[in-house]
Length: 48
Image 1: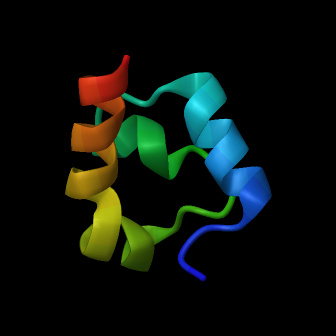
Image 2: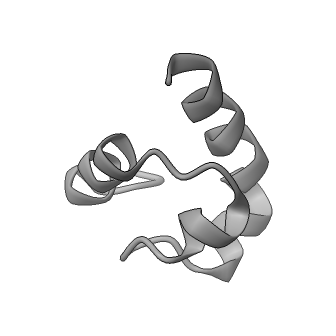
């Protein structure tokens, strides 16, 4: 599990546009930003 359901819901609701905004979401720490941040932001941008 990379992100919990609650974290995924928060990402979908907040639609972070960059790693800084993504890191403000509970459950998204520095290690997850490093590993997945760019891809998550890219996916959010493509769906927003």
